[in-house]
Amino acid sequence: MIAKKRSWQAVPVDQGKLVDGSEATLFRALALRHLELPVKDFLEQGLERDLPSTPGVVEALRHNQEDEERHDQALNYIADAHGVNDKAEKEVQNILKAWLDHPAHPILKASVLERSLFFVILPFFRFNGDVGIRTVSADISRDEITHVGVHSLVARELNENAGNSLDKLRRATALWIFDELGTSTNKWLDKDFWLRQSDNLFKRGKAEELSETSRSRQPAFFEAPNTSLPSYGKA
Image (cartoon, rainbow, N blue to C red; front, side, top):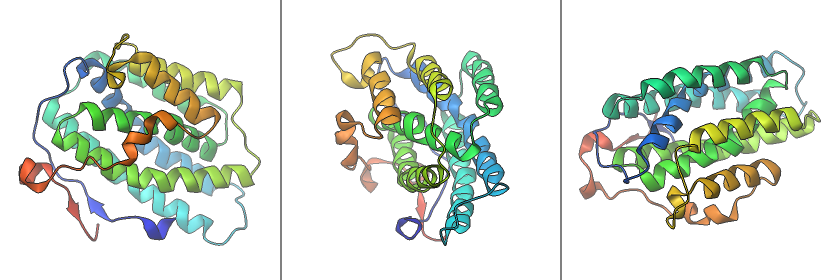
């Protein structure tokens, strides 16, 4: 899984047009960037505990830790370009504290966050954001596929399972992110659609309704200014 990763570097982006009706939710989702570095800390806490004896586990976790800093930087570039919602930035601190304080195994917390929240936020970015946001979302998504695979396997080998308490925290976080949306004929702006994806990813690890996100939405180079295109290659 690690070998399939594609190296990339975060770069500043320009402000573009967001899909009408998505703005408030996008700012809430963007506020969740404050969980990127805590995920790195969760992995560090996990590395300090007993781990499966499977060869490569420690190396894979270390590799994933490095990604979190790049994700944090890329999302902060989006915040720099679009600004932030002060109310959302304050409210997310309570969510952050709840995740930090939850007693579940740290690697399990990382797995649940990535699988059932980040994997919902990233498609929301891709279908409602501008060129810079879509590009960042696609790059982070490729990393997160590996993260979810590695962290889910480690949690499974440790016999760590998400219980009702962690599910309630995950659900409460998803409700907060998408609370500004209502019912819409455009599923990418429909509150129930996004909550259902988070539920399905948590319970089954699958969200068939997000199958369209498997098709590339990377902008062509002529669509965007160079400042909104990533740098690929050695990080």
